[in-house]
Length: 256
Ligand SMILES: NC(=O)C1=CN([C@@H]2O[C@H](COP(=O)(O)OP(=O)(O)OC[C@H]3O[C@@H](n4cnc5c(N)ncnc54)[C@H](O)[C@@H]3O)[C@@H](O)[C@H]2O)C=CC1
Ligand SMILES: O=C(O)C1=N[C@H](C(=O)O)C[C@H](O)C1
Image 1 (cartoon, rainbow, N blue to C red):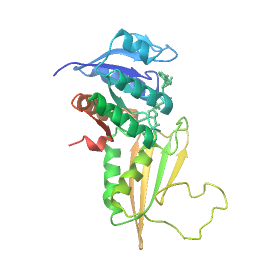
Image 2: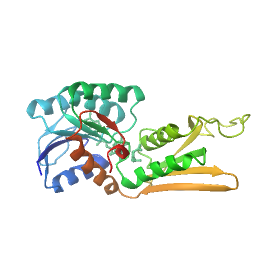
Image 3: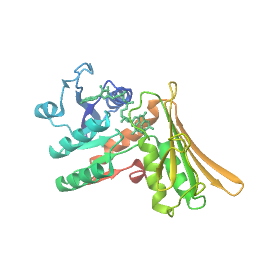
Image 4: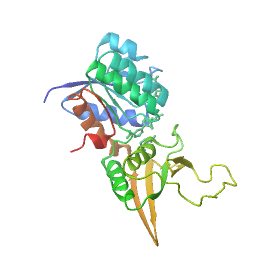
């Protein structure tokens, strides 16, 4: 198999550390550099404070970004402008940003994968919820994460609602006259689907999709107990992005 040169942005982070290990342990991946704004990383490869400095030194085949929403967007754009493919786990991008990055990837004729969740089980949970929503259109999403997470709702919750929106008629849920006596009690709302975000120490990444029907409730739940759960998805994305000429949003679109 052809060797793939990889750079990682955010190597000291919770996900970044796991990604460094994955790349180091995969025979056909080579970690060539890391991007750490504080230059504190010690991955045994050159550490650069910015993507521009990194790319001036050597262009990797693939950039893996696991940083923050603002930085992740700028990195992905910069990488595409330099002709470098990206695998982006960072969440919190707007629909406009995704559209802009897709246009850029297609103009450059190179691949980019933005996957709000790399865990295979989470992708299945989203697909099963999408399937079930045809029969149970009243849906509430409960996402639960560690208390250091920056974005709410999670990228996974947003993607789940988007996938459901593809197959379910628009629907206002709950009583038409319902009123929040405490602001936020009904959570966020996307196309009638309510999304509730829980942040607590001890949690990693969890989501429960609750679908209610007459006298019944279907609950579809996924739990990531360890960030290793995301790494097989990262590996598939790094391999697949080499073959793409557009931006793919969501791991479900590349799994067989
Ligand atoms: N797609 C997926 O399956 C998953 C996605 N995530 C997402 O990945 C992102 C990172 O999550 P965590 O690792 O938990 O966060 P974290 O806070 O542990 O790590 C983020 C790292 O980015 C670094 N960073 C910030 N600005 C930077 C810059 N300009 N250049 C280089 N590095 C920079 C920080 O120093 C930090 O080490 C979040 O957006 C999160 O939502 C997290 C888990 C799974
Ligand atoms: O920040 C996290 O931890 C996670 N972020 C992603 C998201 O926002 O959905 C994926 C996973 O839920 C973990």
